[in-house]
Length: 202
Image (cartoon, helix red, strand yellow):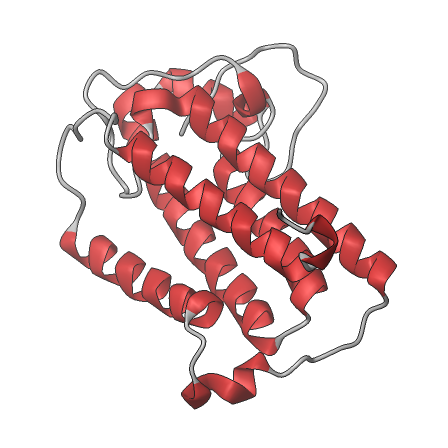
């Protein structure tokens, strides 16, 4: 029988990230084709930065032992708070991915017959998937307290900022005034309130 008390907070966080990864892989199989391929320079830089973040997060090797050192100490209540922040971020990411449906893509592309989605977290945030992942990484840092997670959070934040702006350039070109109006009504990574109009982008 599974002993739930023996499962550490770190392990719960790890399993939660794996579950999100599986969800994205399955969803990618159902996504629509891109209207045009991603630019080579954008794809290469995105893959290199993503590979670096993956190494920092998941490659447990003696060669990176220094990066596994804990940079600060936290009591268990702070770890539990970090777990809750991680789960909240992952749930936001999963919800945003669900509302995107077949319009989701890991690449900086516009899908065939692209349209603005008018439901879910996209009503207030233009890039809630990125917001959710960054939130989850911050929570994971509180749980694990290791240097590699602080470095990964920095790398991922930079990549997402660049990628989001590249996506917005494409969407502004493709959707014109509709997207410009949406950009005024929803925040970039943080929610913007005070407007009832519900339009959204990937």
